[in-house]
Length: 268
Image (cartoon, rainbow, N blue to C red; front, top):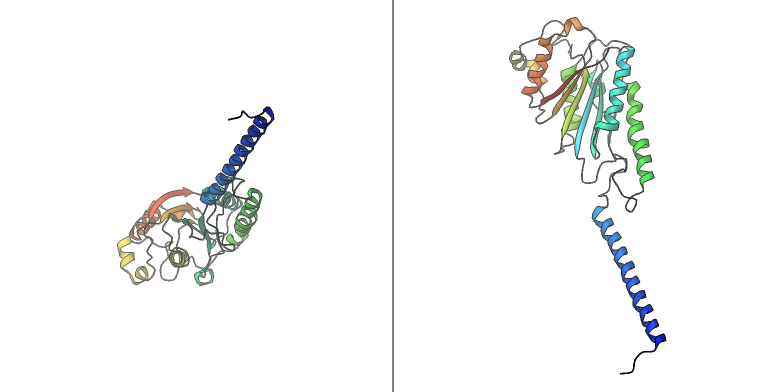
């Protein structure tokens, strides 16, 4: 067999190198496509920003506005809200914000209800538009929630503080409306001094068993099974906010199937 000429050998080497290069390019393209396919987002609802597969968890926030807040309390509330929406609510979780006025029927629906879409920090530029994700996070998640700050406070005292009824509304309009299997938390910012014609905790803190057995207790009972409760106490009238009051609420939430995760006094 005749030996290849030097020119032919050089041409053969070029063809081999070109072939190897083409194979390398194909391999890189295949790897990118495979990565995009296996790591791409499952998609989300453009209105709620929730994953199309459903929220991963649910945080409900209830703010008592039946009494005016001091300057310090307003500042603490704003700081708490900002910390909540920017750091505490995990990506893919739904957050529902409720306020409590003297008429619980007027506040039966959330002020805002939206999922945390994430900032995109954990994503790759190969599979996501990081700038667009960050812009969406700020414009559609952070801003709408922080804009509700003014709606959470009042300059006038309400005649009633229907805490039990409002907890029922939150359960119905959030946890029961969205049967999410993941973590569920209820954050309550209040002085916990329920006050309606049927029951006033300003007058007397009842025995929990007597309350649950009463007509009013049975009517306002709510199932909060597996819900974590975070209480943020506003000390508007400390003379009525005894340890007995706190113990009553701890017993109440225990009877509903919930667990008190934390009790935090609010400054002011």
